[in-house]
Image (cartoon, rainbow, N blue to C red; front, side, top):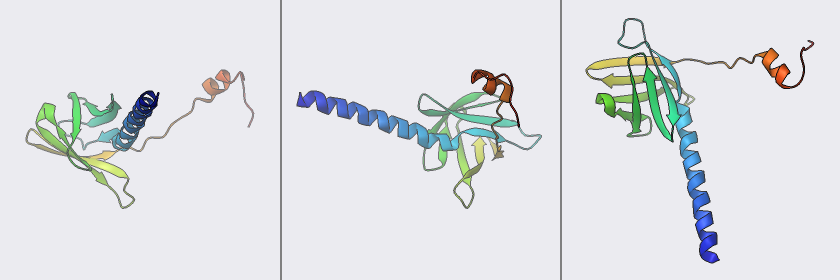
Length: 129
């Protein structure tokens, strides 16, 4: 019985650790835009299976953590480093890959709620202001 309880607690602990790791990776996610005329116009970074991945208009791949804000890009023999402001918020990314140096800024995204869809899902067809 003690072994079973220990095993259950250990499994729960690993689950919480995996969730914490995914949550800590979320800070790196978003869309990063690069200046016109570069080899890529944007990179979108997301978490997939507990790992950071990216996609762009030129390809996709993975990011493997090297240091706090630094990652390797094994598919392209490159590196990426996230840029933070004074509040420690990620504001950009610097990528060095295959002889190219890219500096991008993080897009500020705003969630837009479709009121009609929201109200319809709540059983209301209209709303008043």
